[in-house]
Image 1: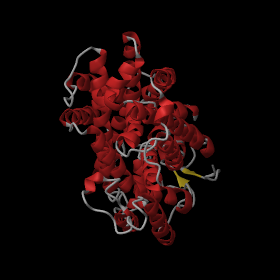
Image 2: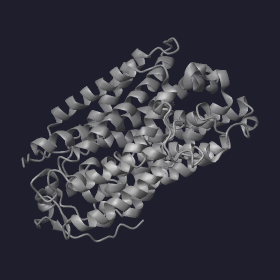
Image 3: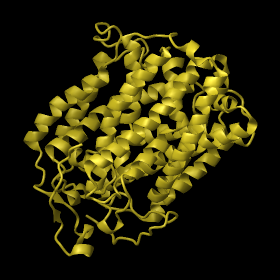
Image 4: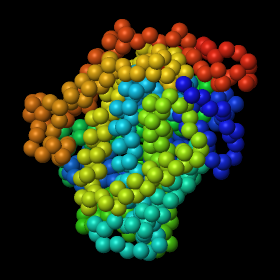
Length: 505
């Protein structure tokens, strides 16, 4: 295993972050759980979450109140999962996805890593397209319907790369700015939509059946659960003794509240907009804002919120890319120059995808979000079950970088459980939920009246397969094992640190 000496890290917000997948030492730990609230609240007060709420009415034809209630249920269910992942950050001091090496092995974790990188690219590309549209509106550069807002995408990509290169501290500052901008901007938009439209007349119109309710729940849960690979990246600098429950609740409340506000706005837009939506969701919000100066402010709110979210995608994408690459060269960190280069390449790729994206945005985005749920549910269950029930917060961190160490190169228990968790969903899938399936409907979908519960089945089956199997085969350390450099410079003690707090919420 190759170690490099730690680089000096500055406490300045505008200092370029030096760390990637190596553990954050004690002397660099800082902040409070409130930073998690503002990051996830501000990061979810954004246009893509609005579009997700819009989908429930525009594509699934859900009755607005039914959609709003179902989205709340889905956000709460998914929010529990993502917040449990966030609570791992302070204990391990590591980005989220490197912890998958505990379950899948140092090289076996490459499989979920590749899928997560694809997710980051997809979300970053859709975010760039929507934000590029807002920037084009802001600078009064019009595009034809279905035409990519190339100028706006390029400007937004440059902004994303800059914030991502500076890293952790600036990202959290962006979260605080997005929180304030989102509260003010969305409050104004809610006032406008209730004064410009007869919102109450749209309630009671649409589908209210259990199948429609469940697909809306699925959209909400999917949105939250796809954050699971992100969250510890942004809590890992918190002091190691930060209470689990505080990190959990700050993340949960920030993400669920911010998301629900945005998705509710999307539902209302879908309910009242009709042909007014032909100019796209960004254009509609500009018109809804009213006067030109108000529209310009709303475009700025969209850009700030989406910049915060897209920076999370670029930042997390680089963490996963580095994690995948280092599983084959046993390095624990890369230089800041290499990190910056990775970010620039990643963001450039998202811009290319955004420019080349299909005009059928809503339907493609809906399929993308739902398919992500199918592949990340079993990974999330495996990671959480191992961390809280099998390893019980006892991780051999140096072994995460050594394929000949405790966790080995490939763990077939986790990989097999993961495959089962995906395959078991197939009989329950419906083409009403996943239009990409064409004419296919799972054999159980008819029995369930078209209701798609595939992700719930995956959660249950993955747990039932992995937990007893892992309990018999996994050999966690008796205590958390930190690398020597974690605390030696402060205490001179050995690198074995007992776990003092149970993982209770």
